[in-house]
Length: 581
Image 1: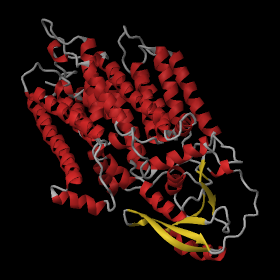
Image 2 (image 1 turned 90 degrees about the vertical axis):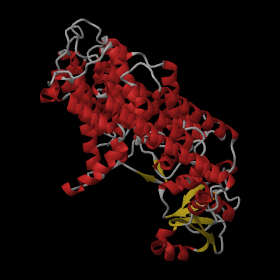
Image 3 (image 1 turned 90 degrees about the horizontal axis):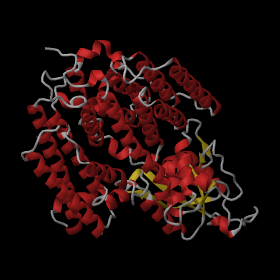
Image 4 (image 1 turned 120 degrees about the horizontal axis):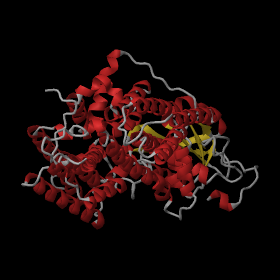
């Protein structure tokens, strides 16, 4: 029988997930990957470069906070707010703590994303159409307990998504877009129960998303979500959206349009595709939203009785709308996983509504699959780490030496202790999960979420030195410094913004566009790919090749170092010594 609501849940199935355990899981996930990690190639490093240029402009220059630039180039499609936040915190950073301070607002935004997703699912689950079937003699789950259990499951589903781990731990506009889209999601989900707070969340979310480089997505999410809330059937106890609410939302949309116009943010990067490219998008979604997408599809199937008039049921309509908009944005932006990142809260919300409809056999299948998958992943990480430290087993050690030539592993007692503690906690969780205990509808998401957090933590502790060596420009810049010595000024020609940001951060030098050699700047760096275009011109200016610096032997990412044939005296105005530092 196709019931209007397929959720049949007893009060015993919505027992509370221990708050300390859930909060600890979130804190570990948020901090792992931000703390003690070098900026990675390339968006993470480029973002840091923009922040450094805003917070520490070159002597004689004034930072233009409305037109951030890097290597003298301004991107008209650049997001503003994330760089403002990072540069603002960076100005307060003591020496050696620049990266950590620039990431503080992004740590807060990831935490806010998790909290917003929890409250959004909680509010949607309180909708009358999302509540479980009432039993003839009582005993069904209470509305508040049921909503809290689904919110816990939705948060766990978000933590389990594979695509969240790396992109959500980079200080880039992608994370700020995720945060502000989540605020729009929670604001619309809680309307009209909490009008003031909900309206504030929508205001901050739409304006933040506009200033984070996605004004079109902000309007689509805000306008479409507002219409869904306007036509949805709301319980009289909760109240209905008033014309004043819709008027305020309309004014907010107008404000976003005006802001985007004033700051010249209305620019499009539409990449044409054909239907033959659908498989590319499908592959991206399969791994990026795993393991939440199978549950989301199951949820749509089990709640199909409400899909014929989905606009009346915000617990389905709002997540579907957010997923549809962000998948569309992914399609039109060249299959960017950074655009698809915004779909994860909606996918997690849909996955949460599958939990009260899961059969016991399907729940057991999820448990065993995730148990094997994440246990094998964790074991692999440990085996490779042991091989790096001891040389045994020989094959993993040889693979590391081949893929990262020049890497010298070092033992870190804090990292080892943290990884060991997390692994023991995973073993205890597995023992609890396979034991006999009362059923809870969120139990099927405990192992996927905890396994994802475990593997991410192991990577960011045991493998962090290796990943920093392989994914950062630190070793490359060290090779440059071996050649250039104590030079505090470098000229550049034909380098990428990531390479320029690496020189600014790792070498802490002043960069100057290529001109004739001078006594102040007697060295020049250039990307080897541009040698055929610029080689003759640089030779005419008086530069001669001296050495090369590559990333792990990659010819596609190699810097050429030029020295002056006969450095001429610098006839420009002499800068104070402090400016050279």
